[in-house]
Image (tube, rainbow, N blue to C red):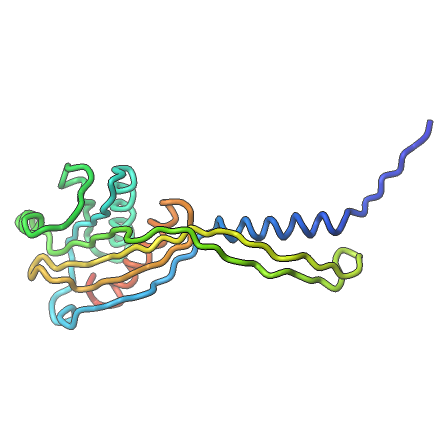
Length: 204
């Protein structure tokens, strides 16, 4: 019987191509959130911190709305701020805005602030990953792999913190998330917002 010997040495070109493809796909799939812009009212530090707030996430998708409000309420609670999702108070699906009537209603229920979140922009961005060269790769001479283009989903989210005592906006932030799923956008944005509100003395 003839035995066929198969070399354990792998094709380096094929392997490096697979590696590059995996990196490119990974770049498009992973999420990263940054705080692009922020503004704090001069009056924010001149009044008592918000202690009992309502979280609002404006979305036509009720599931996304509830997930966003729940996450923000949890992150604010970790910072010592009592937070209640708006869906537990306002049963209207597809909540679109925070008007004066809503502010008055929430203030009458004993809340002293609102943290409202909305997606203001979502788009696809084309990026390029340059080629890679390794002079010694798995025992083989150096190999070069050409770069490639990949798309990323960019989501910009605006958050405003209102005082129900005065009706004024105390803090505003704009975040940018590179992610393709609502969970990442909600989770990352919520953590940044909770940290910023505490840092700026707006929350406890």
